[in-house]
Length: 386
Image (tube, rainbow, N blue to C red; front, side, top):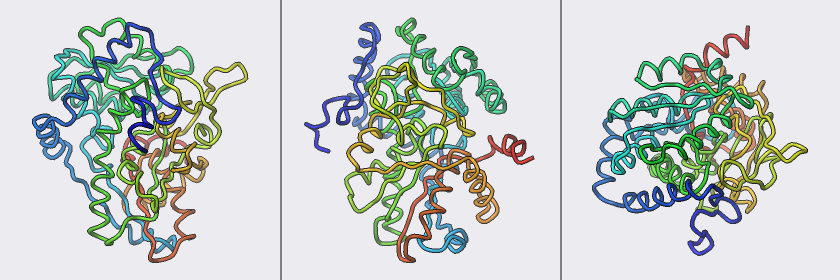
C-alpha cells in the first residue's frame, strides 16, 4: 500500500476521525507528538530498553513439534507473546504509549479493558512510571475476569465498572472517550486495541509490529524461508495487526484472522462508524452496533480495526470464524500436547490452525500468534467444562 493511497489516518476507505471538535484538537496534538517521537533515537533507545529488561523481549518462536505431528501436514510454530511480562501482547503497546505519555507531561492515564489484560498491562506500566491510573471495564467483564480486576487494584489502579449498554468492552470504550473529552488537559488515554479515531490504530500497530518484526527474522533463521501463513485471533485487532505488519508486503504469506462465530465482525460486518472511526461493524436493524458475545472477553467487540477492514475488503487478509466448542477443544489440546495453556482468545487461532495444518504439506510452515497465556481463563474454563 503506497503512502499516497494511505491518506493520513485512512486505510482505503476505513479509519479517519469522526469526533467532536474539542476531542479532535486533543487527537491532532497526540498525532503530532507520536510522529515526533516514534523515529527519535532517544525515544527508541528507551523503548527497547524496557521491552528487553521489563517485558522480556525478544520472546521465542517455538517449534511445536508434538502438535505438528498430531495434526499432520504443516510445521507449526508459536510466537510466544504469552511469555511477556503480564502474560500477553498488550504490554508491547502499553510501554510505547506510556513513554509517549511521559514525554507529553501527562499525570493521569486512563484505559479501557475487556478481558483485563490491557488493564493489567496499563496498571503495571503506571506503577512503574508512578502515574495515576483509572481503568474502565464493563460490569459483565468484571464479573467474568475478577482475578484480573484484583491484579489491577493490586498494582494501584482504580477500576471503574461500566454497567450501561451490555456492560462490555464497547461500553468501556464509550466511557473512556467521554472522560478524555472532559479531562484532556492532564489525561492520556492509553487505548489498548488497533481501533478508535486516528492516530490510535496507527500508533497501536506501530508498537505491536515488534511481534512480526521478530517472527520474520526468527523464521528465516529457523527455516530459511518465510511462513506460508500467519494466524492470529481478532477482536479489536491489535495482536493480529502486530503479527501481520511485517508480512503485509509479502504476498506469498497468507494472513488469517480468526474471530468468534458469535462476534463475526469481519465475516458479516458492513461499513459503519463506531467510536469515532469507520470500519466494518455489526449493525442491527436500526443501524446500531449489535450486541456481541464471546467466551473470550477480549474478542467481544462489534467493530474492528480500520486496517483489518481494509485488508479484508482488499483481499490481502482472510478472516474466518470458529465455534466455542472448537476453541475449548484447542485450549485443552495445546495444554495437553505442548504443555502451554493458551488464553481463550489465542485458542481461537489454535482452533483454526488445527483445521488448516492437515491441508498443507510437510515442508510448509505456519505461525500461530499465541497472544496470551491462559491463567486468567482457567477458572472460567473449569466452570464451563463442569
